[in-house]
Image 1 (cartoon, rainbow, N blue to C red):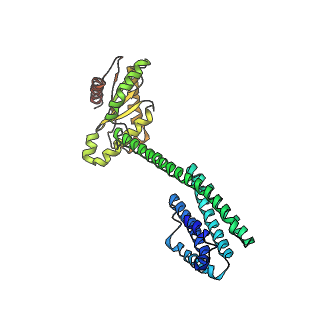
Image 2: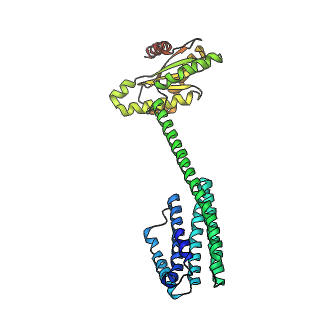
Image 3: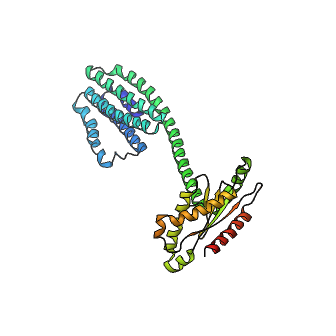
Amino acid sequence: MAPTMLFTGLLYSNGIVGRLAPGLSQLCRVGTAVLFVWSADVFRQSNYIQPRRLRPLLLAVGWFLIAPFVFRASTVLVSGYAAAAVFFAIAGSMYAAALLERRLIGAGLVAFVFLGLAISNVSTAVLTARSLDVEPLVFETLLVNTVLYSLGMLGMHLLVFEDMTYELRITNRRLEAVREELLQAAITDPLTGCQNRRFLDQVMDRELQRHSRFNLPLALLFIDVNRFKAVNDTLGHEAGDRVLQYVARFLKRHIREADYVFRYGGDEFLVLITCSGEEAKRKGAALKAAFDAAPEAAHLPPGIGLSVGWTEVPDGTTDLAPLVREADERMYADKAARS
């Protein structure tokens, strides 16, 4: 805009420079507006402006360099103000769209400035077209544009700051999502979707303290899949994986969401359940009966069933490992009784 004002000041000098000044001033004005449209396109990543779409601007360059020698200065000025108004309006609309998309105050301020510049240029074009003496308009135009461009600079700085914070928020959300995914992957068995032993170590202290604080009973169920090794040896590991996935779905269906189902290792599952020892014993028997009676069990390899051991977690327990071994021993006793 500085060259625009400089050339505007030369409108009334004599000679070739004076004749060419209106075209040069308006060429700079239109070029400024086009650059602002381009900046909005880059900011919004709309990729609307392509090199081939800028070729018609060469006609504008030719017009503003030749027209001052053919037409009156007012004609050149009016065409420049009108063209600049169009491009400023486009830039303002694009930044207004950015305001709606991202809720950035700076984008709104910049949109206000560009729409104000569009109105200013339209007004100046109309006044210039009605008066042959355009000199009184120079100061008023310079004053209005100075105020608007000052606000525009403020809006641009604010927009850059808000855009940086916006990108940081988006990046932080992505990092948080990735962290959550990694956390879930670290505590989840990928084959069955159950929690793994690492998650048991994480929740053990918390659950023991919670049940002690609220005086809630706590028990363990240790579950093993009968004839699982034979399935792997005769039908292959893919068949064994399908059996494990079915058992995991079955346990999740019959265990409350407030309780925990862990894949303890191989074909062994551990359930941390809020109930007394006797209730855990009955729950184990109910699980075995439901597994054998399930219609889907008909599609499993022959002999597949569940062996279940149980134990109650006494008050004051700080480590579940001995109790897991106790439930494991009862599971083997249950397996021996079924064989």
